[in-house]
Image 1 (cartoon, protein in one colour):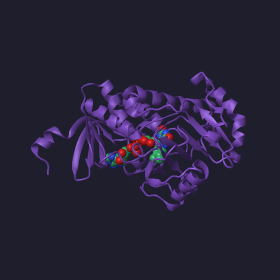
Image 2 (cartoon, rainbow, N blue to C red):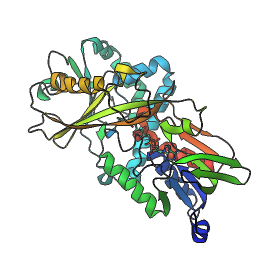
Image 3 (tube, protein in one colour):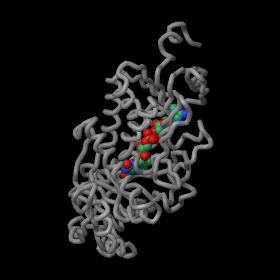
Length: 372
Ligand SMILES: Cc1cc2nc3c(=O)[nH]c(=O)nc-3n(C[C@H](O)[C@H](O)[C@H](O)COP(=O)(O)OP(=O)(O)OC[C@H]3O[C@@H](n4cnc5c(N)ncnc54)[C@H](O)[C@@H]3O)c2cc1C
C-alpha cells in the first residue's frame, strides 16, 4: 500500500535502468553526463548486483592469443580488431572514470599457458601481432617459455607461455563498490530488492512493474539485465552461461603474479595478493552450464581443484577456501546486443566473458541511443 508521499516522490523518473551490474551503472552514469538534470533510477532485483559484475575473477584483459585465433576463424579481421579495440577502450574508460586506485588496477601482465596440443598457436603469433599493431603500436604477444620454471607450473604439462604486457587485474569488489558510489554521487537513485516483473511500453513513456505490485514510470527505459533478460523479453537471442570460480587460502611464497589463461580462455587464474583465484571449466558441460541458477557442479569444481594441484601449483601446498558461481550471457558471436528496442526502450545485454572490459563503452553507446 503506497502513501500519497510515495506516489508523489518515489515512482516517476526521466530514465529507469533495469539491472545494477556494470552495464546498468555505466549507462546511468553516461546518461547523467549527457543530461545533468534528469531524474535517473536503477532497479536491481537483488541486495547486490547479482549476475556477473560482482562474481567475475577481476581480469582487465582483451583476449589471449588462442582466443583471438579462434575469433579469426569466426569473424573477419576487421571485426576481430574492432572487438579488441572496443575492449581496450572500455577498460580505458573504466580506469579514467574511477581511477586505478579505486578499481585496484595492477599491471602485472598476462600469460597464456600452452599445452602440447596448443603449440601450433605459436606459428600464428606474428600474424596476430601484425593484426593488432595499429591498435597498440607494439607486438602484444611474446613467447616466455623461460618463466615456466620461475612460476613453478608443471613442466610436464605446460609447454610454453605467451606474455602480454598490457594485460592487468582489478579488484572486482572495489570497482563495483566505487562505480555504485559514483552513481550515487551523481544523484542516481539505486533501488535494490526491486525485481522487475514486466513493463508496458506506451507512447508517452514506460510503466515498469516490480514485485510487490509497485509501478514505476519513466520517459525512457534501458534494459541491462544481461543473462536474465529472457524473463522480460523472451525472444532475446542469448543463452546464459555459468562460470564457477574458487579462491585459495593465502599461500606462502606464491611463485607468480599476474593474470593467466589457458584453453581459449575457458580456464583463467590470477593472484590476489597471496591467494589464487581460479575459474572456468564451463567447456566440460557447455549445455549443462547454460543456466541462470547459481549452482556449482561437482564435475567442474573437481576439475578446477585437480588442475590447481597438477598444473598450476604442483609443488606448492594450498587449500581451497571457497567457491562461487556467476552468470554470463552468450550468443553466436561475441558482439553484445546494443540496440533500440522501441522509441522509449534501449537494450544492452549479452556481454559474454568480456563485460568488465566492454561494459563502460556499452553503457556509453546505450546512453547515446536514449537521446536519439
Ligand atoms: C566467472 C566469470 C568470469 C569473467 N571473466 C571476465 C573477464 O575476464 N573479463 C571480462 O571483461 N569480463 C569477464 N566476465 C564477464 C563480466 O563479468 C560480465 O560480462 C559483466 O559483468 C556483465 O555485466 P552486466 O551489467 O551486463 O550484467 P550483470 O552483472 O549480470 O548485471 C545484470 C543485473 O541485472 C539484474 N537483474 C536481472 N534481471 C532483473 C530484473 N528483472 N529486475 C531487476 N534487476 C534485474 C541482476 O541481478 C544483475 O545484477 C566474467 C564473468 C564471470 C561470471
